[in-house]
Image (cartoon, rainbow, N blue to C red):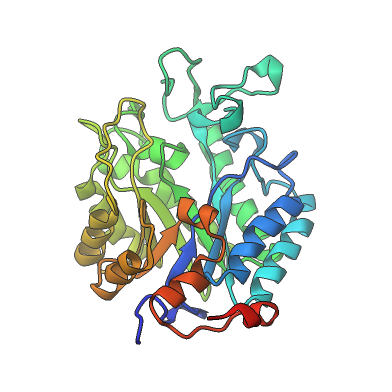
Length: 355
């Protein structure tokens, strides 16, 4: 049968063999930002498992921008070498390597989930965090340092430098992380941004840093390669960032040359009230696509082939990104093709198992 999920998607000079992407998922397994064999096997197995696009976990543009001390980073040239091995393997599997560049802002310096996930003290391997305003994510945490103009310029410069390294490492899609309560989202949300300068207050001021980061990234990222941005469509909290603002931002980003909005939600404040259900974020992706005309990616509690097929076939989104489901099933692309009776190429080493 003809499957829309397994139809190609061309964005600029890159063609994805299908509409299945692996979401960036932190592995909390790096040392000093350096990738290792865990990242090679984790990302590589999803490529051999049939996904068209593999987006590497939130990779920090600076040491202080890491979510945890074990996050991947791309703030120095020495970190490129292992990443080249990863991108080359992904490409060898007829998949496209992507990277998400990020700065965690006030949510940085946190322990890995299996170590409790709470703030790591400065005297225990942690560090001072920064944000748009001196407001902590949790009431019992030390507040971040409000970024001054020099600090903001450093963030922009760090994104630019990391972009240059990402290109050298062989990534073919770059995603800017503007979601989940990390730094760019912190500036967007009026719940975490109480600034009174040109970076706070009005919608135009709150999106200013995001637009400046996009421009800095574009100064290094080739025009012929896809540029994505992940946003949280809503804060799920009264008075927070909302879908209307997300649509407005998406229109601006489309004009600025961004190719796809990876639509997630939440993460800005600890008192959020998320209404979880299967595909609960898909309507956000659908609205943004419909209202702005930009390509969108849908993510969040999408767990089976039929569900994913319907999202793409009905035009709700152009790409479906899988996180936890791909942890449960690294061969998600191959098994979904079987579920949908789509004939896809398997790795030759695995062909004898093809049904």
